[in-house]
Image (cartoon, rainbow, N blue to C red; front, side, top):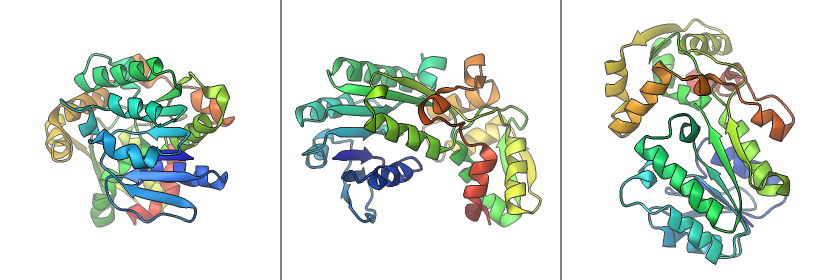
Length: 279
């Protein structure tokens, strides 16, 4: 049996479907209640209390570990989850980390994530680490304004990074959970090309079949909007990357193709698949 945390998110949902299609038993875990699909057990648990995960891990052989931002905060104990998994008989853990662990290693959240990666390596379990860059699904932040006014408002309109479709992250995670060949792998996951917010706007317009205007925000305007839904430190970190990506953050990784045998999906592919959110 495989346990998937963060099961209601943009990675957890396609990962659950991919695993269920293989006939594996799957238990999904999220902080909020969710309907379970056929053959999938769902538990509503809060990973801020690692011991609460114990019922989900009973009989599990593998765990996909995705931690929300607050679980990297002061006083959180995500390493306890790894210890609990080992004590419960789990043999393999696939950890969703961040590309920033390698590209900007000295921020507080990235130091804690690096420490968690190190705990996993020392655990005696089989493991794999996924380090994605920016997500194509972050464009959903624009969905309301596109629906209402056909406008995308974002900073740094002509600065791009190679954003990745979360469905590709999910497919890589499934491969790492199911295939021994990926044990000990550290995979940097990006999309197939660098793409700017202005170019993303064009891709959304093409998917919709109607014009979408791009409006460039100042950094201060963007920070104020982001700070309403994330810690200020994380907002600043994100804006640093979006405004001045370093060479490592601009690099297009071959790891998705290495694992899946195909190129990663483009942002245009993602926009076509999710166009209903913008109509």
